[in-house]
Figure (cartoon, helix red, strand yellow):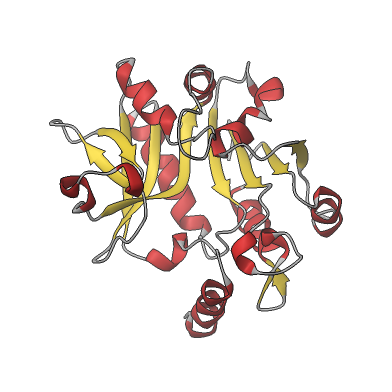
Length: 245
């Protein structure tokens, strides 16, 4: 897909996996989950793929060596916003669209990503978020909309009011952005939160505050955006692959 760069976030430890292996190296049906993500990305044929690595970087390089990727190393894991900043030196002057994916979301389909990118281009917005509505949204970040129906911000569960917790539309962590707008907003995010991390979600509020519009593509299939955080999630993903048509 011309004029499209992809950033895949794959630097985290994955402590809840209770294993000595970096999260993205855990296998789903015999294949490391990061390789499943990269196989999917190949189907959309982007211009370039940037893989942000950190924890066990050498092992991740080894497992992904047969893929056409450019590695960017996140020396310290200081949040998702900080991870994307690792690619800023090479993408800061790029004028196309940047798609951001997670290395621990192995069931996302290429057709969903194509639809997201097509809607982004058609609507001519600064950014687009892949979202899903859940009957039980649990501890996911909520999508808060303004009176015009566009996204106003993403609120993390722990920061949400009771009214916001009642919102059923959640953030999948998968986005596409106008690249210049993305990096302009990233320069403004702060780490004034419990984790002392730079959250990528904060760019949404910054862009909106600057008068930009952010849209969403809502999908029904939650499993496509299910992140693998522990062994139970891994088992669910494997079961979903077994039952897929």
